[in-house]
Image 1 (cartoon, rainbow, N blue to C red):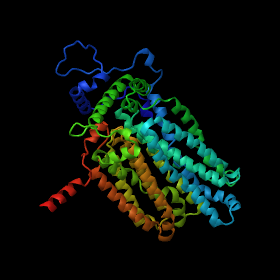
Image 2: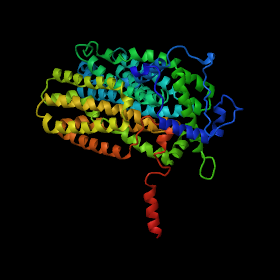
Image 3: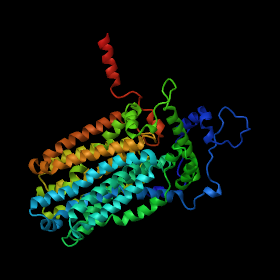
Image 4: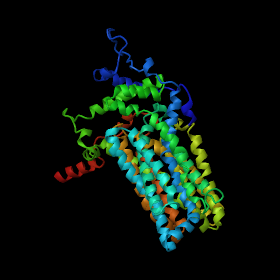
Length: 547
């Protein structure tokens, strides 16, 4: 995060600058309303310099550091979304402390367990719902409204969870609270990740997106720590452990309320004056000028794609969300990167679904006593938290593909070693699980940076939401039977498909994933054909049948 506090962020690469200039010069007439030359009477040379009209007059200047303001907004979005994984890890250790209360509320342990399962899983389903609502809101109202509404729902949900032991039907109220909390996180996670890809300069875009995984790791670690029986994991105060996120959510809401909308969204929505004011808030004069130039080129690129080969206007976003979604799915430049995004986000750090919610149970099954297993689960999360923080300082110095594929291969290797060597020794399994989660933190930061980078601005929210919905539905299905499989089959057999999938995941990403680091959205978009996936095969078969 400290990289955002640096002044004088470096310029975009020479290749990107050349690409942007060529497009700007070629389409000068289309961009002229948004660009201003210093002297319109000057005879233009072959390569006339383009001067971007930036709002640095006295009335548009914002006091203070743009880097600091951007950092606060970036950190607030992460705290209101991925840090809330705290609420998933905290319930893993709270069940023993909560069981006396649950047995008082229900007539049998079986009913108490069922109520707790519903309480825990409601957040996962809420996440999927929140991703869908984010598309509905962002389709017309931009990014900020979804983010603010999501944070408000987060706060309400946490407060409702705190009431679990104090009001009649408290378990039902708390379950509804976790559902609201999941919806809120889904809203912030979807619209917020899009904002993170649009607020900083292009060279720091990856670092901003990588903070999401940092917050996720800190949330997982914090939940395991605060739920220890030596802190709040006791029958007398266990419910208060679920209220800790309020310490971050309330200041995050205050910061986000004062922050402007995404400048990129405002430019593409033809709200130029607001866009320039927002750009002055988030970026300094040098970075802001380059970002506006890149946004205008993207706007021109999107405008060109609204016309077919005959020059007729295609259906626009005014046709409604459902029809708009169907139209976008017919375009290979949306569907092809969407398939890549689904692969990248759904199966990244796959082993997290195993270790994070069930590590304590796994360690107990292999010889550790309850207290030692709980401490081992906590210590298992410490290295990944430090790695995710340290990686922010150099994240944009590496390619996204490298940071995704190499750690995934290492994760498969650690899983293989756990199968072959670690299971017969209880001390060896926690060590291998720790190494597995450590490399997963690296691949996770890369994955959450890649997904929004694959799409143009008008497709980011829709694509990110679809990826989030699929990921959470997959995780919900997987976790619903994973504990039963662990208890009946053993972790050594459960790990086998995880290792195989990690190898397949690395191979598929090596084959199909383009590099997105340091590239503009339109540059990335040019990697994909307008034809739908598989259309070439159908054309070939059709020609064969005709012939």
